[in-house]
Length: 104
Image (cartoon, rainbow, N blue to C red; front, side, top):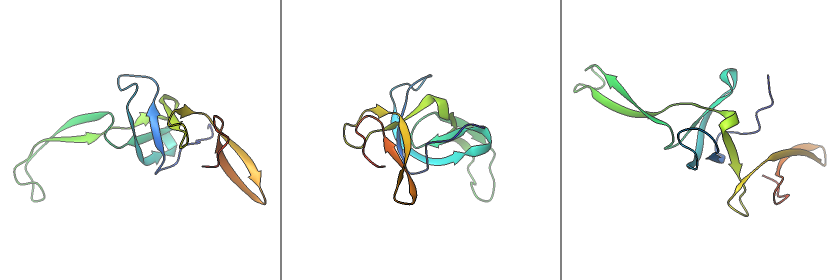
């Protein structure tokens, strides 16, 4: 299993696929499948039957997972896609942006 360098709450940019260029905040990371759900990106339509929770039913829009390899973290300084590295700072291991060398 590969090291997942993206965490929930990070701002990411889609670098490949149908939604290339879109940016959003990571809502959830699914470690088993190496996928992430990004807010407002990869929206799919789900047809729902009427129920007690949703008495009218109908078509619901929701985010679908995107593979981690198709996402790049957005550098907080330059607002561009960047790679992520790890380094020891004291006795803690921290993530940093390889473009600006800024701790994330």
